[in-house]
Length: 620
Ligand code: G6P
Image (cartoon, rainbow, N blue to C red; front, top):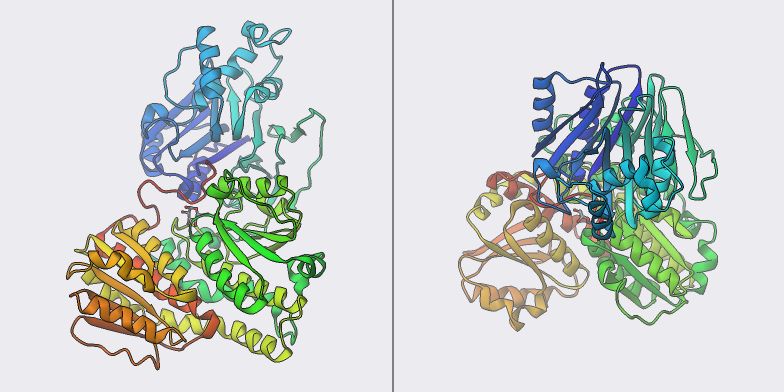
């Protein structure tokens, strides 16, 4: 949510800053801005409402360049998307970009206004700009300091003492053209150590074009970057040396290639993403619970129940896993939306394994829910995450890194199916350690997992048929998705995909619940999409489909072979290539992703950057 890039060195970094913003645009895209120190040493700021391309055009028009600069792409929280609210925010020759939320900004704003500072935006970020300026002048005494801070580095270290909330900051100042200062608390920020200069960004993908050597800042860290080096202090103000890691992120992974959209690319990357995620089981005859961490076997043997915490699509992965964990591992499992759990008075059970699921590993509510669980005495924690360096991964005792590769499309696709693969491995590992998995069952499931990439490939081949169906949705205002059992969460996910990218109002329901309300909505204008695997609930599901058909509803059925669901007037059937038992949700969801994608194309929406949304939700 929001993206930051910064650079300092000897070259003109304006093109790098703009390219970095383009890479980070999926994190927020309602306005963008940059500030550089130009050849005369003056601070030049350019901002534009809308996409980075708008900013790019303005920068080109103004012919701006500079060897020190900071840039930002925004997802509005405080203040509408507008040029005056776009970052950087400036105060007396210094400029700031910020990700996160300053919770006490109103109090700080009042304090600064009383000192005579005039605000020109509605943002929390502008408070930081004025606060820094105050720290650097005589006003520092009014803030409780003996005198003005001698430099920007000191000013930032002082200013952060006032800030409550989450932030990643990058700051520059006309009077100190040889440095950039950055700070991190809660929101991710990393440094890039390059040949031609030093860099900072909220996401490694913005840096790989210039360097692979990176330092991930810890919470509380403040760093000063110069063209020649970086210095770092921790929360206590002690100089620290942080590990330099070599990023393995490939530049291709964040490029579109021949695809029209990242979402399309990511849907089609699923066989590979699943193959990579499942690589650790390789050809092994037996499953090793150690893939979840060195303590996994010991912890899995102790646990009596599982509590899954997540948001959005990740929570639907958790809901599928609930069916698996209870059925295969015999452990009670609950799934909670992280933003509810963190504020609810729940009854902790220390024998519960707390599993947080997150593509990004930085979703604020999931992270806070994890901390809440730990504060309540939960010691057994596991993260399932797609970003190895993320805060969430670092905060749990056990971890499993899905290897889906960077996901850029706001609507999650390959990260979701990789999460399902990871959760199936978790189910088997729990069952195994708890003595509930026979050798034969283990081997059958392992073989099914290994075949999964091929099975997904076969579903992707259905694209032409799904594309034809999508034409019929363009005029619809609403849609219902039905599923039963472990396909009910897939109905929820199918509805979420359709609503987020096509803006058609869609709801997912357990099919048995239809007659308790949603059936009242069914008429010829209401497409009803049915997830119809060939499983034990098929006859019940068929009865639910009859309920729709009898009321003139148009059915679109994704049916496995052998279900006996046939095409007829008002019943459209798309045959899935194979029935896949417990792992069938992985196949069915791919078909629903393709449906949402093609409906959005027909509707002409911005598939990768749907209105009002953002990829990583780092605010509450
Ligand atoms: C946002 C994204 C969704 C994602 C959710 C949870 O809403 O648009 O695609 O499912 O956040 O994100 P996480 O990174 O925690 O999986």
